[in-house]
Amino acid sequence: MSGVRLTVGVPTYNRAGDLRVALDSVLAQVTDELRGKLEILVSDNASTDTTREVIREYAERYPELVVSRRNSSNLGFSRNVDAVIRHARGDFVLLLGDDDGLERNALETVWELLGAYDDLGVAFLAERPYDADLRAPLDAAVSRRETTGGTLYRPGLEYVRQNRIFPPFLVSGYVVRREAWIKAEPSDFCETICVHALTALRIFSGYSAYVSHVPVIRYRVENKGGNRWHDELYPFTFHLNLLVGCQGVKASYPADLHRFLHRQAMRSIAYHIMDLKVTGGRLNARLLRLRLCELADHRDPLLWMNRLLLLTPAWLIRGPFGVLMKLRKATR
Image 1: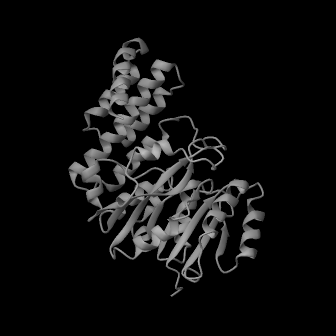
Image 2 (image 1 turned 180 degrees about the horizontal axis):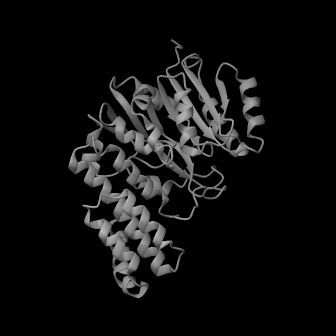
Image 3 (image 1 turned 180 degrees about the vertical axis):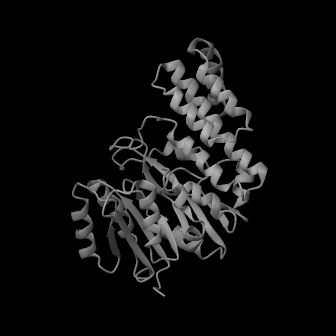
């Protein structure tokens, strides 16, 4: 037994400067009481900048706290997230993006949470949005929601049943029980860019889930490094990945819960199709249609609606899309 209760896992790639901010935000709140119970594990995805030197510097300065590992090649985001959890010594892993940071109350909040629920499988910590330099909080966004306490879902499937949504998309703030993660067998989600959210869906089946309302994650609303997920199907990539998750839990989920998730992904795809058609954005309709036919449930009417939208000219979509935008604005 290692005695480590919590690992702060930081998957990183080519963000040497931002990584310093992330590590400093953790180290600033490590007390004598936490030493021996906490580790900071940085998993370098074969960075080509000075990330390796930064990690070495921190490991030498804090040998009792900072542990590093390096992939021999770039495995992609999701495989690096999986690697940092599998190599952690802690019973639980708090994931922290290499361009994010922790608020001063973060470790205290997590420690209280870990002692409260014996069957906890995954927890989602609330975030506070910051500017691109991670210096000035954008508190207006936080003030619109609850910022104290939290909600326990037991079993975790109640999270989906009550909210009818996927788990959070931001990787920072995920607290996962390492044993539950490995048991969930996330390997078939590692080709996506959201292994954390999709694996949480499987963890829900056997453990409780907790949503904390206390903002403890500092994240950049505008990423200075740009979007890393651009590909031929951007901006549909993420939502198509969610359909992969739907496939992955279909056999074990109640039909109504699977339907909630599937329709959320399909509605998001419909919105992006209309948006690109109206604004004249790039849209590879043929490739998107093929991916939808491959991943979507053919019994869902939204599949056929999306296929129809791909064939519909922009001038027919412009009116309904305008109404949709007004409704979205009114309900926010």
